[in-house]
Image (cartoon, rainbow, N blue to C red; front, side, top):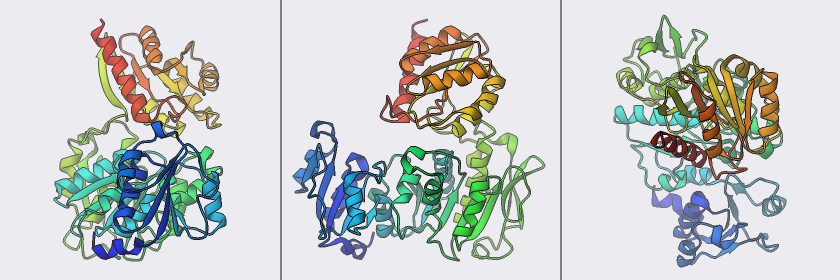
Length: 472
């Protein structure tokens, strides 16, 4: 990061709402650049991470409530944790005072010297972001992977150099709080109904996703899903050249499947011409059967990664090399163990029904499904045909247990068990499953009614499965 970029915050009065990793990181950065920073978190002091570290740096931290006098006309900027809704009092007060309210993703853009690849979508973000990072690393393009994937984006933005690439997984929560954010390569994988408890309307959710594209220029690239109606409509929101990807159609430019191969077709005109000048018009990247990443749904993620990587300058050879070995990410149809002929899979990252559907389709074996979690008012009706076709048993827990059990009954599942938590669900599924079955944790819900994150939920599932294995 150039020192000049940090100077824009010198002397500014900034309020950081919410701690966690991103709040702590951005508060420290703002202090480093000479801003006057105050941090506020509604959690009690003993539950709020990083308080003592910030106070040692001279940053006041207010915990346990939102003070009425936290904001006034002298505040220049509010940087909020992405998960804090816009309905909370300090955010409403800031907007009423016309104080900009942003997330640390915007800060990352303002500070980064590296070009940015931004990847979002309702499903597949982590897999695609990780895969792109691995391909660019193989191509010696010096990627730094951060964002919603677990590493604070702004923290990385201050260290990357202009000859590196910042690869960012971005959520709708993060993107809603952007103003000038501009990735040189942007990808929207898909758009389904999700997070409506936060966004309130589908329109707000979609527009938040599309914030990824709105500041792009003619020299930039947008990678979009030709097969997804919501994603196709995103083309109208960007000035960038578009690379499509499709598992169903042979398209004019981008990546698709033909004759059993993943194929990339370069554009006839536009900003990629110089970069791909020495490449053939159509490239066969890899046979589909050679791809290590399991599950038919992952073919979309692969195709997206191919278009992103080619746009970034990775060779077809580098892409193929990684695709032959990359087997996926933790908590996404992750094989855990085989016990007494039953295979256990962790798909905790399936935080909505659209994410659980590909997991149900991924197996030919009968599935004992473990599902449940935060109630966001979803009816889960789209799961009924999949449950009818694939599930031999259903174990439900959490706030959505009742509605999921009802859908299981509609699907004709004869064995439905209600339990209190994921540990109990594993024990119950173990008793239901027969040799040759799959026990699949694919909750179709967020974890926050019982667990801090889908990672915690998935880790508890895996720990419980391994305990079954050792207790045989």
